[in-house]
Image (cartoon, rainbow, N blue to C red):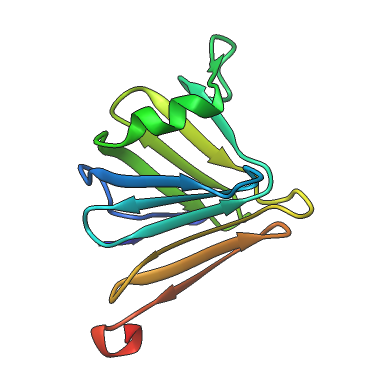
Length: 134
């Protein structure tokens, strides 16, 4: 269930396991599939940290660490109206996609529930009914 707040949507993916992670050959696009059928795609700029990206104690994560997130569960998934996306995993990793950067885009969709996209400083949410997701 999605919860809408003034500046964000809480996506209701808590506890959902990651089943697959893939990257494009150039590494510029990341796709994460979740056990509930949701799909997350980020192209362009993204940041993986261990701990909150805004914390002075955040440790930058290496791209290779993404593969270790298969089997991890979502602790929090928040899509911002500014076009940014933050996904926190039970491993302590935080994946952030900034919404205001040129040539960066994020999209997360859960068939039959929602389709959110963020690009150029704008996040757009479309709620779906089962008949809309065919």
